Length: 242
Image 1 (cartoon, helix red, strand yellow):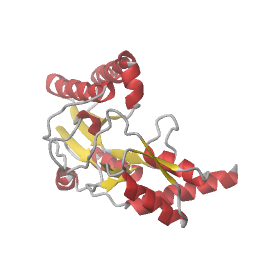
Image 2 (cartoon, one colour):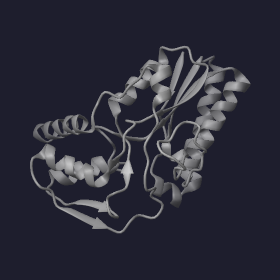
Image 3 (cartoon, rainbow, N blue to C red):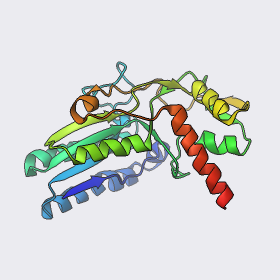
Image 4 (cartoon, rainbow, N blue to C red):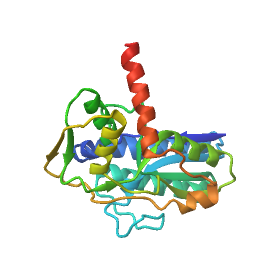
């Protein structure tokens, strides 16, 4: 049997306000799952961690050997969960795969935990301005949710005793460029407003995904433009159905 552990609280700013909650849910929750895996003789656990474990990158692109330096209680909770999974692997002989996800996007994201793409999409469809924090030249690595699922499925089918993989597009995209892509797919100019930079936001981030390509045979298939078009189609269909 295989357990795929996706559950977590994921709001960075909420974690700063309530670090104990994030430790309890994310770290203790992972421990509870690990204990249940051992008791029920589960052969493998697949865990979705986060690029937040890296903190501000010392170099780009970020590979899996990059030091862990989380800047938030959320990132720390993911790093701690990774360490417990590693310890359980070596102590109890359970196979484990850890995926460090970069900026995942796709239809159905919770509004509470929405990233910049979901927020841009909602505002654009409601003719509201797109708010960019800072100058907009900060970069992120956006990966479509279906590509993440593909990586998880591939890891389920492979004999891996323990390994850690970055899952991203392997490309950097500025927030300004993201806003331009939204204008392109909607075929109209969108109003942009720039607000003060948010404290704690990293400047640049993108993943080295060579390891996942080599070992899993995984490559992301969805371009940012195609992914946004798919999201848009589903949101438009949802609004028509309602």
